[in-house]
Amino acid sequence: MIIKELMEKNGITAYRLSKKSGIPYMTVNDICNGKVSLAKCNSETVYKLSKALNVSMEELLEPFIVSRPDFELFKSNVCHSLKELGDIQFLIETIKNDEINVYYKRCWYPECLYLLAMVDYISRLNDIPLCTNYNKIRLLKLKKKIYPVGVELADIVSNNDKIKDKTELSAIPEFLRFNIIESEVRNVI
Image 1 (cartoon, one colour):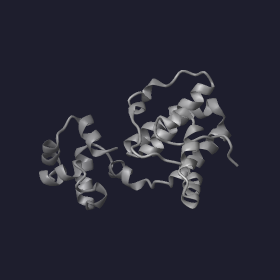
Image 2 (image 1 turned 90 degrees about the vertical axis):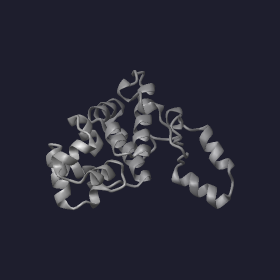
Image 3 (image 1 turned 30 degrees about the vertical axis):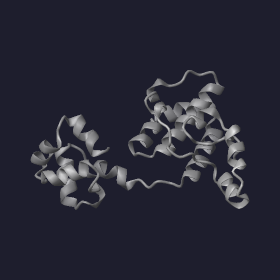
Image 4 (image 1 turned 135 degrees about the horizontal axis):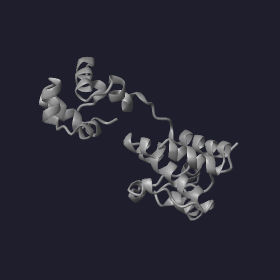
């Protein structure tokens, strides 16, 4: 969990966390505002903060321990999971495990929005109502369009912007809504 979420959950301010943990207020404030990474803090600081927030050190550091895979690999894994599980089971597992919110809380927005687009797309194909748990996330959009790596390479090699335009025209609407250009999710080997 992110430290701000833990503070909110415990109903405590940065000042109160400072007093409860014995960590200087400026240090706590810098951690809360992202000026200092919790992952770079010494073990004593992490220990005192975790104790004051009633969580283990591991829980407090979890966002920094998990390594982020390459986005193309992530997309491939999602598509393979869809192929292996089938549409309905994929939806059930993804929503049950709340993976979309997990990525959102880690600030992994491309992964979060890709998975949400996949859930929405598969829901549409199977005439299943959209899961309303993600309505706030559906309002987001990536600032920069993400194209498949093959399209990016073709654009660079050919120096032809029409390749990207053509790819956008065939993009799946649920992905395009988030500025993710994706036209094929089932053709995986």
